[in-house]
Every structure is written in structure tokens, then in C-alpha cells.
Amino acid sequence: MQKSNLFISYIIGLIFLVGPLLYDASLFLVFDLPKRTWLLAGIELVFAVWLISKLYALTKRKQWQLAAPSPRWLLFLGLVAASILATLVAYNPHQAFWGNYYRAEGLWLYLHYFALFLLSAALSREAGCRRVILAGIALGGVALSWMTLAEYTDLLPYAAWKNPAAYEGRLVSPFGQPNIGASYLALALPACLSFWLSLPWKYKAATSPLGIAYAYAFLATGSRGAFLALLAVALVFSGIYGLRKLHADKKVPLARFAALGAALLLISGVFYGLLARNQNWRWRITELTQPANWTKTERYQIWQRSLELIARRPWWGYGFDNFELVFPAVIQEGDLHLRELFVDRAHSIYVESLVSFGIWGSLCLFGMFAVALFAATPLLQDSQTEKNWLLRAGLLFYLFYGMVNFTTPLAAAPVWIYLGMLFAASPPDTGEKQPFLTISCPFFADNLVWKTISVGIVASVVCGTCVRGIWLNGSFLRADRYHRETLSWELVSGEAALPYAQHAVAANPQSDYYRIKLFDLALRLAFYATDAEQQAEWYRIAAEALPPATGRDNQSADSAYRYSQLYAYGRDLISPDWQDRSRYYALRAAEQAPYKYPPP
Image 1 (cartoon, helix red, strand yellow):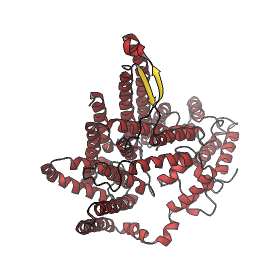
Image 2: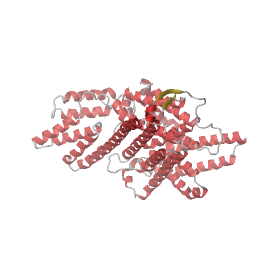
Image 3: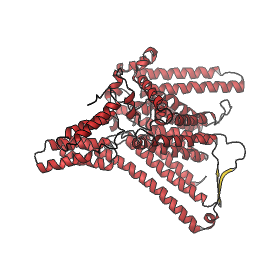
Image 4: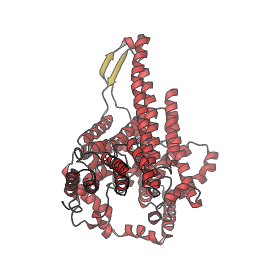
């Protein structure tokens, strides 16, 4: 085992051990931003180390041979190409690359997912590296379950940010949202079971109470989608197990199926009891038993309108995180419920994928899932030591859960780990493959100077990119922290809050969210100012806060309308030409959402 690979595996394990527990009360985005920053920075670091180690290994060879990719790897390359192309032709390419302010699930995030997939596929070929990575995910899941249960004691400060109206009586976990916390616990479960099964029997018995606490934390989140998805996975794999036993022993193990059925009924009863304790939750159960009313739910209406979006641009989609920008265009006048909502997600990974990178990208993505689920080993192979079945269960859970739900950056990261491991476990292609490309480079292997220079140049580029990425993540944190300070000081003094708003814009100038806040704050200060010189300065700050109208066409209807209001408010105070800007944005809002914003 290479020491560099083991080091990288420990860092990846540390990412998943610490990441789920992070939150920061000094930020506006208390839960998501710290986890996202930790995940991206960690991936950038380990991917840089891995690339440099691979480059150094290449310099020892006198010939570099590149083999043609196998069909399963063509799916991955196709997904990368479809993602890049969808970003280039996106409705708003800038947002498609970086993502929006609070989700940040653009191409930049997916490039990190792709790197994590490659790392997982490369490292999991070594058993020790695989164990370390899965142990990190498992220990992180166990720690998350204990932190979730600690909400009953009110010892954790993050419980203060819990939405009492929506999540009363439910455990939200350090993810700040019960469904996301439940989905991560379920995705970490395969790693937990894999780690537990590798222990000696005496340790298995000692750690069994941790499993009970883990299960209770999962059920106490009250997530219907996660529970039903996990139940579906249990039923599917029970059926596969029965087929395997029937194939091997020519009989069905009825006693084991009876025990499994009793266990599932017991768990379902506990879940129902946890939900039914609260009178406001009973609709969450009864709604599932009334199929005639499913079409009236908000998610069904979102999916229905999303199909119209997909039909307009089926092949390449609209780009990552552009859903909120394009969805208002398909809402009809009769969609009274949707008209009052801010819809920024499709609430389904399948619909979201089709909207984001179209049919081609979706075929490649879910083709990768198909390879991972079916190519690792035959379904009916009788192997009691098959460790990949647990990873397959994790992927299957994600596919079931994603039918009606979404995840966050860190919550979806274990999926790419499992995909990489299962890709690496797939049977190798048969037949001897000829090199696709051969490059003779004896001067690298024989010449220490050339080797040092080449490795130094590439390592500098890789390290520079890594440092730049980590610095960028830090700037996002600073901007969000300044924004929270702006909101806090605004309650005391607008003048005291203004510098924090300026710092937020300086730290993340691409975010319209911070610019609008700075403009609004400076304009209000100027309006009530008594000192003419100070008033002029505040007007200048307001005027520089908003970008010009040119080049800002691809915004959401809500954002365009907000801009039109702000420009109209300042047209008589700052510049007469703001009337034209106000009308420009009002027309943009009316074009995108005529049901909501009439033309000026």
C-alpha cells in the first residue's frame, strides 16, 4: 500500500467524520455553508496531493501509455462533458458555474464531486484505503446520531435555529433540516454496517447499543421520504436475498423472512408512534393514504410544470442551479398556490437532473448508477462475503429518496464515494487492450533536472489552484459572516451596519443578495440624513452597490422586480436615468412571470 494513498484516505475519512457535525452561529447560513466549505476545501487538498503523487510516478517511466476508456468510464466522461456544455449554454452561465447564493450547487460543486469519485475509484482498489474511508463515514454518521439525540437535552445551541412551526417535535440534526439529517444517516448506514461487520464478535455485541441509538435518531427526524425509501431498500434486498437462497438451496428461508417482517413492522410502529405524538403531524401520515389528493400537493404541481420546462429545452437543460430563474416562466395564471411560492428546487433528483443538464447528462448520470448497481457482481451470485451489497443499498436508497426529495452538498457526497468504489469493484474488461496513445519520454526518467522542473511546474499549478479554491471558500464564509453582522447591527443603527454590508460585497461581489442589501441600507440612510456631505456619500455608496442594467438579463423574476423597485426608489435621488433602469427590470420581471408581475 502506498503511503500517499493511505494519507489521502485518512484525510477523506476526516472530511466525513467532522463535516456532518459542523455549524457556525456567526454565519447567516448557520448549517450549510460551514459543511460545504469543509467539504470543498478537503477535496481540493486531497485531490492536489493525489495528482502530484501520480505525476511523480509518471516521471519514473520512459513510456507513457494511455488506454482507451472502457464503456463504463465513457459514461463518466459523458457526464463531465454534458455538465460543462450545459453550463456554457445555460440560461445564466455565471450562476450555473457557481450556483446561487445559498445553495451553491453549480458546476463548481460538481467538479468536486467528480474529483471525489475519481479518488474513491482509485483508492478503493487497496483494501486498507477503502476501510479507512468507510470508517470515516461510519464514525461521522454515529457522531451525527448522538448529536441529533442531544437535542432532547437542549444542550446544543444549534437547536435555537430550529423552525418551531415546521419542525415541532422533530429532531433537525446539525444539518438544520430533518429530511436532510435523515437522508445522511441513511446514506452513512452502509458504511456503519460494513465497519461493524468487520469487527470481532465481542466488539459487535458491545457496539450494538450504538445501532439502537442510531435507528432512534433516524426515526425521530420524522422524515417520511427517508423512512419509506429505506423501507423500500429493505424489501428489494430481502427479495434479492430470497432469490439467491432459492437459486443456491432450492428453497426459501421462510423463518428469516418472518423475522424480517416482524422487525419491519416493529420499526414502522415506532415511526408511526413518534409522528402521531403530535397532532399537527398526523396529516403527514394520512396524506400518504389518500392517492386521490396527491395531485393537489405542491410537489406534484412543481413536477407537472417542470415537464414543460424540460420539453422546451430537452437535450442540454438550463444549467445547474438555474431552476429558480426559469421556473416562473411556466407557472400559469390558474396556479394560485405556486404563484405565492418561491420555487428554487424541483424536489426530485430526476426532474432536477433533466432541467439542469438535459437528457444526455441524465442518461450518463443514471447510467453510472446502473453500472454500480448491476456490474459489481451478479445479483444471484452466492457470496457471503460480498461487501459491495451494502454500498449498493446506499445508492438504491438515494435513488428512492431522490424521487420526492433533494439533498445538500455534504449530504450527497457519500453517494460519489460509493459510486467510485463500485466502479472500481466492477469486473475488468475482458481481452488485452492495446494502448490508445504511447509517448516516449526517456529524458524524464533519466534526467533529474527535467524531472524536478516538470514536477515543480505542475505541482505549482495544482497547489496554486488548491490554495485559490480554499481562499475562495474562505471568502464565502467571510461574506456570510459580514452579512449576519449587517442584519444584527441594522436593528441598532443603520450607520453601524453599513460597513459590514460593504465588507460582505467586497468578500463576495458576485452575489446580488449582498448588493441589494447594501443598496437598500445606504439609500435609507441617505434619505433620512441631515448632513448634505454625508448624504452625498451614502448616495454614492448606493449608486455603486448595484451593477448596471446591461449584462444582467438572466435573473430570477423576483430579483428583477426587486431591482426595478430599488431603481425606481432612487431615480429622483441619485440619477434620472434610473427611471429607464427601473422600467428595464420591470419588463424583465413581467416577461419571466407575467402571472405575478404585470408590465409597467
